[in-house]
Image (cartoon, rainbow, N blue to C red):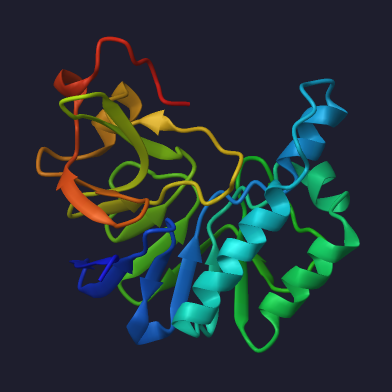
Length: 232
């Protein structure tokens, strides 16, 4: 089994190796920070011209997770598009694929800081979504409980004998869970960064993504490799 199952705020959840979160009891798949259209947005603003394949790759991976889980509800946890212009510039093939993925499913777009308003695609557009014991929003807020969010694109640096390994990761303690970025062209913030370090209690865990979802103690400031800065 390559996924990692755990209980959070009374809900039985599973972290998938892809970075998606599965809530089997609700038939719900949650992903965060797709950043669809990032290559278009960078080029439009005069940046480096990246190969424009990240939207297709991200949607293909999402389709695979939906097929594997047979999810009936999908929550996209904010920053689904790199900005509103990127949403408007999506190629027709991507729009059609999103429509196919939405067919027969409840689909929620949570507003993020990159895409703060509705876009011309199906589904509900919400600032946040409470479901049972959980609250889904884009950015973690102090004092929250049962909160599931994204925004920070958390990554973990782990030392091995030969090198330092960096992986996107879920971060969690008893009060909050932050998802890794799901999008193909996304950087990340290291778990030892003071911003993330301050959000989590001393017993926080990191669930690494990749070939296998693996839970480890969340690396904090003292775990920071000398040659690393932020992982972004």
